Length: 283
Ligand SMILES: Nc1ncnc2c1ncn2[C@@H]1O[C@H](COP(=O)(O)OP(=O)(O)OP(=O)(O)O)[C@@H](O)[C@H]1O
Image 1 (cartoon, protein in one colour):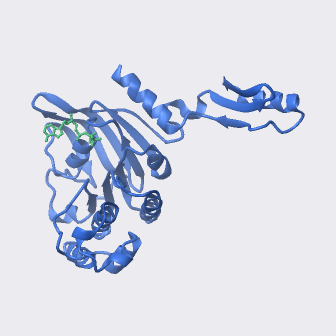
Image 2: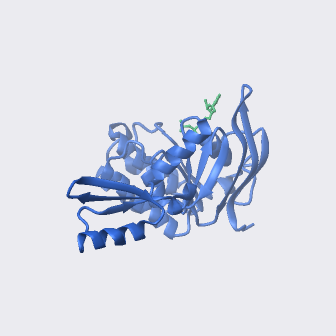
Image 3: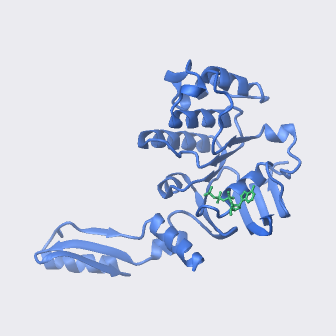
């Protein structure tokens, strides 16, 4: 059955020893969407994602993933989702080529393993055993295994932890390629720039609840927040926080008779907004 949503969650709850790790969480992810779950350590992101993947049992709530309840996770359903876990490490003695070819056999309609190895940037490491890969290269192998089955829905749990800046950019390109091809992606990350670069929408989880869902540009009223205007005056650096930055800039242009030295106008970054939301929740 094709539904317009890849993921629908209503009133999800999961408790461990009386402590609610997920506490009445609602979430919808549209087909073809890249959705990033943000939240501090212990907020309930991995628990939520693993319930959606069918790896953990829930205590209450309704969950639909690609039109099915992940509790039932039959083979056909599993073939339609791709999972990149926080870490794997069972194939120490096998080469990159062997591992990816091996995983391809689990899927009815896998991608070309050689192409996938290239795509994740492991072309030069095809013949290397998994145990000699660096942390970032190992993560790329995890990503290759997550996408080899050509999933309709891909789960990425903190996918770029340990990547160098260039590897992160390359990984972002890969995610954008997958999204452009129609893959729905649910990502958890602690990197706000990653969420901003990739996500159509972000959801902030705190203490087992989704506190806000928005586009990265509008989260927490970021787009309408007061702007910070900075410039260099003869008496030294100046700064003003204003709801009407254009008016202030016009006044400055007039005062300086043209270009304003070192002028910048900025709104709060996604990280600043996120931290203020998390801080408010903690209080
Ligand atoms: N198997 C488990 N047994 C008991 N408690 C658990 C278990 N798994 C998670 N928890 C608890 O549930 C809460 C949520 O954990 P979870 O791993 O979902 O958080 P998270 O948002 O993914 O955190 P992080 O950003 O650190 O990965 C935490 O308080 C954690 O200690």
